[in-house]
Length: 441
Figure 1 (tube, rainbow, N blue to C red):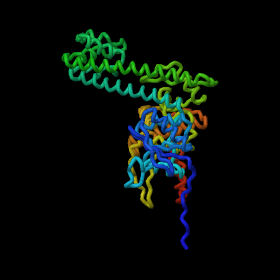
Figure 2: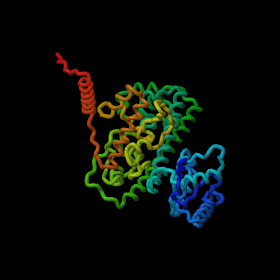
Figure 3: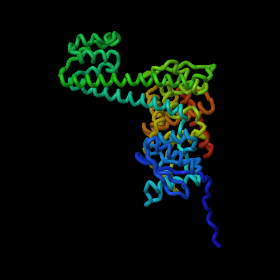
Figure 4: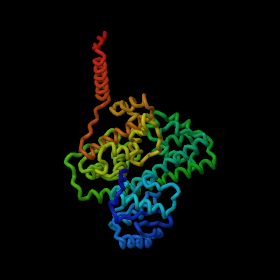
């Protein structure tokens, strides 16, 4: 007699599935026809009333572009349990790809409890994320126009960028503005640089400023410089909003008893009063900015992406997997296939940039780790592994309150040496051999 097959049981009858679009949202409820609503705010109100009339308490929907954000906020504020899922988790059966079928399929999966909700930070973190991401976008746009300024100078055979480090620094901008305003005398232009530059590079700066000052290329230079200054002003506006928001959400938080000295920030330092103090208050007295590769600027970016409550991630492996920094494993039988996924989260990219900065250092323990992995896996693999290590330390600091202490490269290399010796002794014992240290003359 054949055994009866186990059937999946419904765990929640008060569920709905929503297929989101730019013009229409389709809502599916069990044993009811699919209903469509528009995407205006009044349509959202009508949809909420429809859900409440049918005693719906939990809603599932796919993360479709940016269209889900406004509806998610609206449903969340209306008291619904909103489950946001990635599209690959709610893939429909082949041949049934319609908006109507999709919302029904999402509702069915959700009623069985088969959908896993995506990580969504609380509202005050999402607000901070908006400001921080916009700041990063403005910096990228500003950098793009500096590259355009480089091109305009090259077209005029002006090699200033080969002599001074940054043409968007104080000296570089002074020279560029003078060129735009009609000063094309190399000797006079060189005198606009800082004394620290003139003491060592005056002759080289003067030579680099001799070129063909054509009208059309000066126009390109002016456009690039004006756009750069505009976006840097936008960055200042973002800093003011970030400052105000941090002041608001940390107003009633306790000031920690121990506050470490903040690290220096080399590039694009946020113009925010007491940034270090506000971040330490926000993290409940923990200070992840002391982790190698992180500063208050990078910590601000990380917190804006993941928040300060990491309880959603049970272990460090869950956290690094969500960041896209965990090693890929695709085993089938005896075959272990390597698959490449282009999965780069915003938070994961911040840790990758921190790893790149560590790679250029000379005295840090993680630098030795980076080079050890690079010798076997290449630079990309080493950056990913180092970024994962930083993320694990960040997770432990935030969840367990562990204080990070930089050990230095010598102590790290000594630990690696001891580990290798332990392995060699173990192998020698396995084959009945004994290791004898060689005396050095």
